[in-house]
Length: 334
Image (cartoon, rainbow, N blue to C red; front, side, top):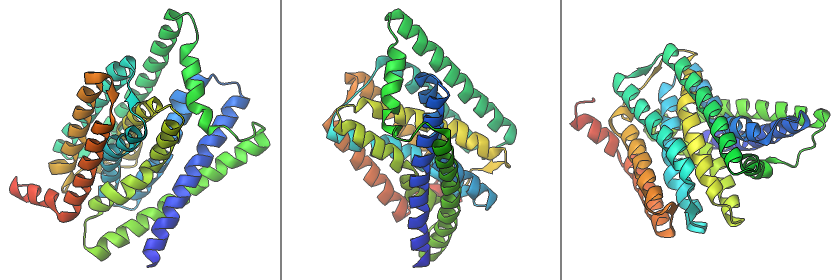
């Protein structure tokens, strides 16, 4: 009973702390006159991944690596099938050709790399450093292409889009005496929430007789995807469902390259159990399906949204029924 309470408290601290962290950081950036495009590509993108990062680091330090990889893989699956599905159900998501061609293809490459790493069985610190540098290069490339597009259109379209994207994170006073303490409090809440969440998740996994990977792939993954889900649903209700696509692709890239990259610096991350045999392939399949769905009509329709949500429910049920373990045993994984 107490573990369930700690799980709820941990999720609540992660969500409120992550929100405070991003809002405080946006206010500080505004005070320091940092351009909106930079804020959108860095502060907002990385800030919304703070819950996943702190959970991954806490799990690595607590020697439960299955939660590290499980939460990342599960979060990426949830972002595509659950977040985009729920958002498109409210309002069909329009896809920018530039986002699909540039960011979507990079996500597909990064996801394929993670599948390859899972077959190797570990992510070494040196490779983690390369992943972090790859994300930095992607951010720089995104900034450059957005500026080029803005000049082509003879107006600051990129900055306008970025300003619209970070609008939901405004509301905190830009006075440093206010924004800095909010930012620090958010960081502290996220760290404390991660500790509660990981400890409770491990205990619950042992209590109900499932692996830590299953908890990471489902409970923790859904919990850490709630910020993206909330933001996307709010944006859709305001008629800006297209924001969800950029948020999800950016979050998934950040999960793979930044979260696993940084966490690996604390020590090699083993990828074992059911994840290399089942879950990474579901993540790859969800990513592969996303691209042609977008290209076919440059949108995600309500019918496709229902398909995404059905696939996600099917996946979660399969995980708890033990299908991944069956696949692992069948193909020689255990």
